[in-house]
Length: 115
Length: 112
Image (cartoon, rainbow over the protein chains, first blue to last red):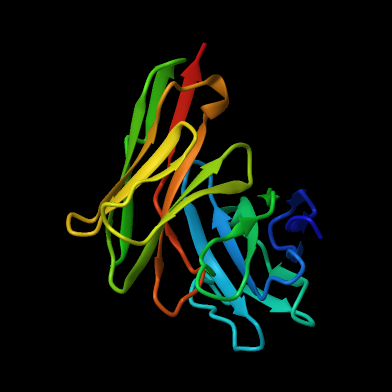
């Protein structure tokens, strides 16, 4: 696609429920990232997929968070047993392989609200 | 611990003013420093700086990196209301692709 696409754009859920957030990266981009932005804060790295390599999960805040990337394209971020502190904007980004692979293209994010 | 600090956190100016946004960093294995503009939700790329002392320009925006003093500045001249946004600074690392550490951002408001 022309840009990084995320869905849903907004999600309201009750504490304790599971949620799934979806990201469709730019076609041809081999790397995919999830970041989280809490109100008034900078972006916090969560997880990074690069091609067929094992993902870098070092930013996931707890074992309630997991992500997968199927077929090297679409990714799903799953949060189990959501807590109020999970409320944030979840941003997905993708990048090309090569020497400028840190130049990220971001989607518009999913605003998650846990009541 | 790796960290990126931006200042000021917020700034209000009038159209036509010139602003300077600051970003300092303390990280290991530094590769490059990036600036993003965030209006509403999706950050958009502005600059990537890898070498010291080389100014990058795009229209009224420019940026420079000092790897000795570990900081970067983003300048915006002749500001316009459309420049109102949060400006994010981030640092990348060797062998870690786009795994970036971001500063808190500077919220710029340009009044007519």
